[in-house]
Length: 183
Image (cartoon, rainbow, N blue to C red):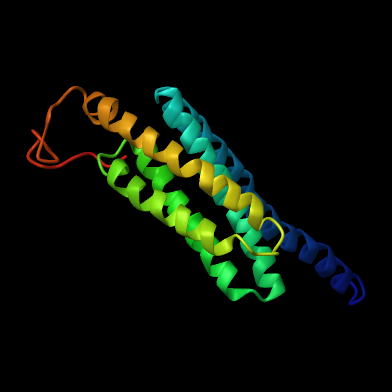
């Protein structure tokens, strides 16, 4: 084999070797959407077992969380640090409240009081903001405060006992030695 043929053959082998890592990199990306699809299906099944008022509150919390994040990005872009911090707080609070309602946590009602107060305070503080999207978040927060409180009360009335397979709750601890399954 001549010296000219050897480099050409090596060049043919190199692209094949370079293609293999690309294929390996593509595999995790292909698996990731499948995992993401499974989670919403499981969550939807769980949400279907929730009372309608609780499901509506969860949907509204997701909406305000998303809208607050978008408005926060707008506030950051405009250099309005105060508004950005307020919106981030609203988003975080909505996220925590949503998780507690989904789990039908006995703490959902306690936290809903804090959520209601935080939403009302943030609404007052953000009332004059000119940042795009903020007034929509303010409106949602005002409407959502009462909805979350009612949904949390409904969780307390119907949730934990059914979710724990009918085991009674005593002092916040189940009869399983004080350990509750994490969901």
